[in-house]
Amino acid sequence: MGHQIALTAALAGFQVTCTDNSQAMLHKAAEFVRTYLPERVLKGKLNQAAADKAQANLKFTADLEEAASKADFVIEAIVEQLAVKRRLFAELDRIAPPHTIFATNSSTFVSSKLADATSRPAQICNMHFFNPALVMTLVEVVQGPHTSEETARVTMDLCARLGRNAILLKREIYGFVVNRLFDALRNEALFLAETGIAAPEDIDNAVVKGLGHPMGPFRLMDLIGIDLLVDVAREKYQETLESGDRPSPLLVEKYAKGELGKKSGRGFYAY
Ligand SMILES: NC(=O)c1ccc[n+]([C@@H]2O[C@H](COP(=O)([O-])OP(=O)(O)OC[C@H]3O[C@@H](n4cnc5c(N)ncnc54)[C@H](O)[C@@H]3O)[C@@H](O)[C@H]2O)c1
Image 1 (cartoon, rainbow, N blue to C red):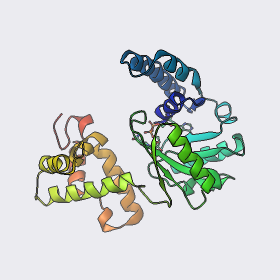
Image 2 (image 1 turned 180 degrees about the vertical axis):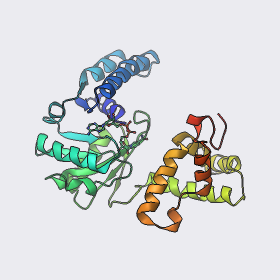
Image 3 (image 1 turned 135 degrees about the vertical axis):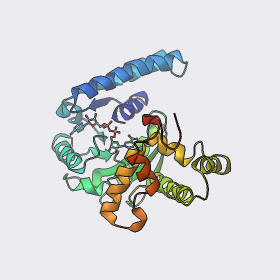
């Protein structure tokens, strides 16, 4: 996610420094940019001058100090581990100028879990991009109880300047908007399949033809990966112990059989 967000900002005219604690990942990110931009030019989607400008706007370094010491805005997209993110936020707080805003791209942690690792909670918020970030234009900006109006406004303005369609959540909630909506649809789809009311293909057909979605929930689960969905569901259930959060038996069964979706060649569909 990080390199695609960085390139999105570079294409929008911002000076961006992309950093990672792994040289190999930085190298991969730089390679991606070096092939992506000429491909876009070849396809006629971008002119050569704009590609050159984006390339010139984007720097890569493993040195966090170099990346953050002059940054006005930081978008964090590192591993989804709270302790690791908190350590990074504390470090960024020491390095970045006092006015700098820190946004997290986390899919599951609201920014109040990070804000108190810094001395600037008013300048901390969520900025949740969708994968692939160069293609998907939605961003969910979440204003926590600690986030100032000014931070929310600047972050929304930044999204607009990045050519993204941002929505502002005025309160923190697990799953934000899109994942909550998808969870509700998916849970109902799994219930209909588990009770034998309709087959997964038919439920997908109903969602595509009846609701106008580009893809049904079972096909989408195959794309996301059934292992990831079961892991996330187990984690959530351990936290809430709500019976409604128990991982779906149908998903657990597929997981046990190694039918993990597209990546394993079989999930709800065969690939
Ligand atoms: N993949 C998605 O579909 C998606 C969508 C929206 C949001 N997100 C969120 O984006 C974040 C990253 O997800 P991803 O899928 O790109 O993960 P990823 O594992 O592909 O990338 C994480 C990167 O963070 C680097 N990293 C780890 N610890 C670091 C540290 N201490 N300092 C600097 N770099 C460090 C790793 O080397 C790696 O390159 C997560 O918070 C995730 O919840 C992911």
